Length: 549
Image: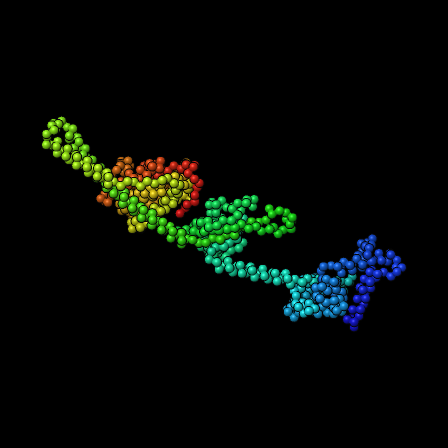
């Protein structure tokens, strides 16, 4: 009975009001017509204005009785569902319901509105053509003056397309995350505060290797030093970079990790309402960082380079040994030649026919020929140009070259490089020879000490425009009387002197002089030897470099 009465009464009221306003009967007082369209003195919304507003609202609106029978629907509802008003009024709202909606959703809906509360949720409904759509509903109870439920006001939105878009975005996000996670390189999105907002499995593995220290901050520190990377939003430079090689030092690990880094800066618009009309200055900047671990390739490259240096130094050592041997022969040959010249100038041997004089002249002539042959056989030193070099890198190479010798002698080397050093103007090969001479000298000193704990320490630091290298050993030490003698040619103070030509420190001093530096012993050091090598640092030599190898 309710259904039969609801349709004609409600429809007649609505249609009657609309027909009356569209074509008022002739003679109808204008005051009656205005009464439907004018807000009264007490600001009460009159039926004409209410009807026009609800009918023209872009939101699908329905009014049902407490049992969910439709009493009213607006034009937007007709467009949304495909049902005309006369097809749906008096029908129950379940007419739209699809069997795809879980029962518990309806149970929650009715439990909420019966408690006189607003329910918001999603239902799967039918269009008139039985096509399903996803509806977002807000159902609000309309109460009487006594608090009883009189009607239910419903507002419907078709969010099918929004849902489909959300699902596509979720799929694309899952696809992107899956692709990023299986990627062998490190991928991370980093904010200006250095917080990681997205990463992949390779990054998480790297985080574990670094014992919880955020690798992103280490990468950014290295990039700031090498290419001046900055998160400054006002800057238009350094927005992207490609294949920048950086080195990271894992904690409690002796082996460095090398990465080839690429990145691009992206901006995220400000989502707050207060900045809606503001310029892009309110946008946040992020770095999409991709880092490929090239440690193995770097080690292979370094090993190949080290082998090349080793071969070069062996060749130079052979040449140097020949120079030392020939120089020693020349030096020793000069002694009897000087004696013969002295004898020839002595009184009593002035007669040209004197057999002794003849013999001495013949010997002297032969010696001159030998001397000339030796001088011609003396290998010429290799000419090398000055370039900007890093002393930490040079020392690291020398230590690598001496590793087998150190292990065989049971010597522990304590390598303490300054984390940041300026480059200096120098000859790389000559400096390698310099420090190799000094390290070999320290190794020999420690071996002859006979101590069980054999130690050598290398330090680097900057002190008042001088780059200082300290070589410290706990060997036999050097007596004060010999601190100048050791730099003389062919001096050798080792027990096994036959293995040494005695030119090492002499040549080391030559390299130092060529570099406008100095070398000196610490006179106050006990329990071994402490040697200082000082190299000048010019302001024009170049910037500081991070070379804590």
